Length: 189
Image (tube, rainbow, N blue to C red; front, side, top):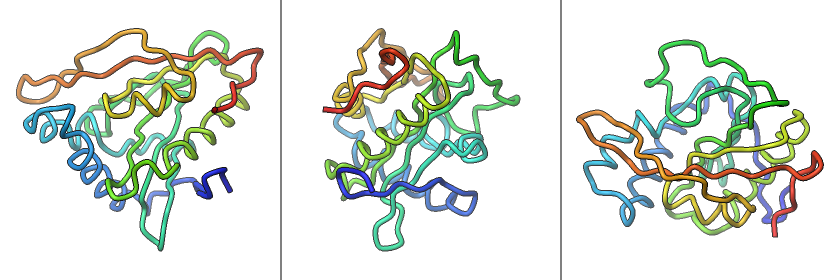
């Protein structure tokens, strides 16, 4: 069990419908102050959606309350930094942990469950697994509402990127990075 009392479990294929529902609820309920409505509409299912590769790799997690998925997120040893299944046209190659960073991917929390430690519990688990997999660095393509969570774990902004979406729209993301000191992840404070 995490410090916040949450116990993330590995996502399985049977979770996909609940994840699709949660992602749409999260984006519509949390991203409004940061993005325009047309950006939110275009992002769901494209930039923000289920990436089954993470589930297949066993690096994607869910948090449940009362049998309902209220949070999700994970990490990846693959090249893709963000996006859903719909953006993938080929198998996503693995990166070399000696030369490339791990990726933190696709964190979403139900709007009724924000700021209760769900994201932090998943993030702490991801960092433990990233360290165990031998990565020395981590990179995130964060949404604007996600930046405070990642910053609280010591991630630093390196650049802002406009991710292209359908209809000629873009959505601003923040590339954030963290070095793992001496092969060990810094403790969350």
